[in-house]
Length: 331
Image (cartoon, rainbow, N blue to C red; front, side, top):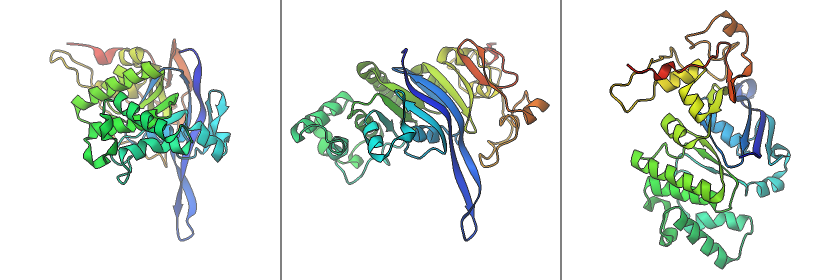
């Protein structure tokens, strides 16, 4: 994990707000507002935050499923935002995505064989016989019988459909897979099976993951590093162990304090955030978290906090970020 596979610099995605008969632009929704990040080959970086913080928009902007407003995204040193349509189609062989809803992401009119063989046809890979063997092989690798290839999506359970989604992402032998809440719609028992499958596949194919999720326990289990996002911006970034044991940003502490502990004798200092997530169309001045932060002072209302290294390989955007393990204090 020494080579940088993906480098993101000041990535922004602003959706224009239009009003009136002429649909004139009247402001914008700052869904992603200045993300800078490096992802190493073979690592898993988890991305967490409340609904509406821009996690999924960031993932789709990286792949240009939606076009970013500003920034640079380099994949193996090549700026993919500067590629034309034909060049981007070739690049997509290296970068894939697994969507949250395993049913909505599959064409109900296509058999599983058609779904999995389509990427091979688009990129003109292999002859028909080899494509068929490739589809059967990848189905078997994700834990499904090759005979299922003739079935349609409605004939499968949620967990099986997500395995098909993973197979579709793997069929082109990519290097990077963005997992957009891949287990959120699944039962807990099925979640563990899918997570174990993803870990096995990563080791076998040397995959790099961006794992977007709400479930912090899953993120802790699978991730090497974790990025915490708030209102389209980066709040904290650290290794999984360090972030969960010594969170420095008050927002991260609040998220972790809400995670249940499987021990009735254990106690955490619970941080209850006041109010709702502000609108990304009208973010607060200064630190965007100051309207809900228990540590907020005047400087937070006026000055944007600098993204800084508060400890070794531990970064945060907070005026008062200090290492703390208070959320894990026990009675």
